[in-house]
Amino acid sequence: MNLVLDCDPGLDDAVAILVAAHHADLVGITTVAGNVGINRTTRNALVVAQLAGLDVPVHRGAGKPLAGEPVDGSRIHGESGLGNAVLPDLERSEASDDAVAYLCDTARSVDDLHLLAIGPLTNVALALRRDPHLRRHLAGLTIMGGSASAGNITSVAEFNIWADPEAAAIVFEKAAPLTMVGLDVTNKVVFGAAETARMRAAGTPAAALAADVTDFLRDRFRQYVAQSVVPLHDATAVVAATHPHLFERSRHPVAVEVRGEHTRGMTVADLRPPALIEAIGPPGVAASDIVWGTDVDAVRELIVKAVLAS
Ligand code: RIB
Ligand code: CA
Image 1 (cartoon, rainbow, N blue to C red):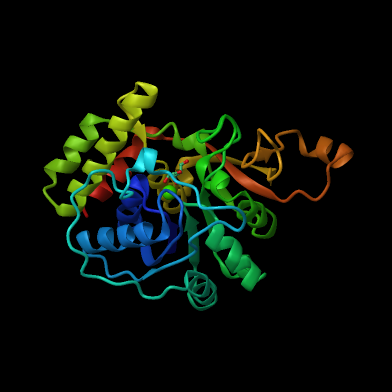
Image 2 (cartoon, rainbow, N blue to C red):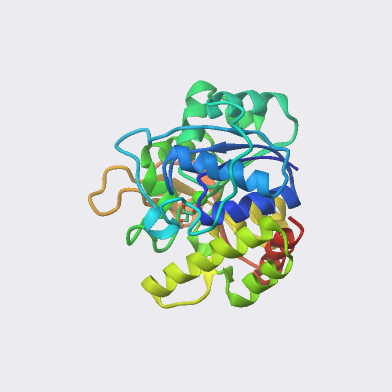
């Protein structure tokens, strides 16, 4: 599978880059502001590729959402976006500062291309504005984002959607069907001390970084939710794209709330029976595949093994 990864590194994004490079043909990386600002997400993507020795271009993308001001995930991801990891001097530079052009051009020029977005959907929405036929040129579109149950950044919203709800609304409407790898499934695949010890034992700089960012996330989780295992949301989304047979999914209309005082950024999944929706509406809400569950042990092992090989 040819894969382009749109990301906002980001602790779990960093691990996702390693997993994508191992389990797919990682054609390119595009960056977006999200967990931290665009300068840092772009730098972080470059440094992860450098540490892992990946020959993959990194294209800088949007520095702010379609509406409103950039959000900030540094309370979880640290000021750098990669926790307290000690990073090397950067020896690489970005391939361009136009991720949107890269996404549109690559979708048309690379066969069997799968786009995986694991940050706010700003770049994908801008690419759809530039090329309304974008979805047709993609073999698949998977996002880490949304939730058909509880939220994380608010009681009902998941961070990537909440960070740019206008962009997410465009993507769910204009690029359906997509595969929504939301908190419903990503919260089930968790990593603890045993996994980070295995990563460290690999003895490579990339595996050490993966262990560092996972342990940093574990420390943050201990502060906020008193648990010592953490989901690596984005890494699980990579495996959902590369190993779809491991995941249970079903197709439903999904709309994104952009106005609600308490619900802005919520993915509103209509789980009613299709015949009832047909009978009483509302009509015309685009449907996507919501991922609900997976073989947790198999997915965790695919992620750890990719890190050990990086
Ligand atoms: O809600 C999880 C998502 O938000 C992940 O992409 C993680 O990187 C954070 O940005
Ligand atoms: Ca992310």
